[in-house]
Image 1 (cartoon, rainbow, N blue to C red):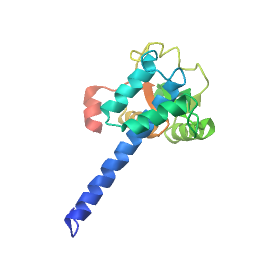
Image 2 (image 1 turned 135 degrees about the vertical axis):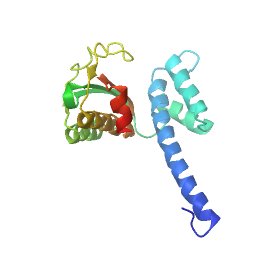
Image 3 (image 1 turned 30 degrees about the vertical axis):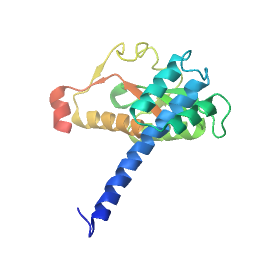
Image 4 (image 1 turned 60 degrees about the vertical axis):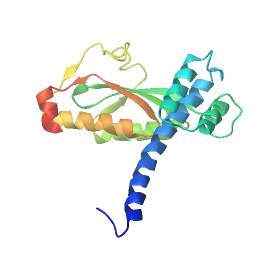
Length: 185
């Protein structure tokens, strides 16, 4: 896939890496901004300290971290981010619990609703799936999906939701058998 020069190859690789890094930095900046609203001192704000640690782990520049803290504590200019939870059901009644950091609720809910309808699901009201995810890592119950087409649709929906810039985390209660999962990959 090499071009006519070494620079063409470097340029392509650099563009791909910069794009990935930009997405990660955007999500980390939002997390720091929201955490800084609860206090700008990392020593007394464990959420902020954790967000800063993740940013440092991703090699985010110190200036960006400081700017995000300043913005969150009210000193910076620009958009104000808020934490929002969206809930919905995908194909086969699989529950989705989506944690979002957004500067525009209307845009985000429109994007999420569009993805749910594209993949055969529906956006639910607040609290519609929260009871399933009282412990986020261990849902109250799992739904096992054995149909390859449905499993592919559910996994594609989860991946599409995670790819949205505003989405921080996506939780679901789907269980796909290993042999089916291996055949899909």
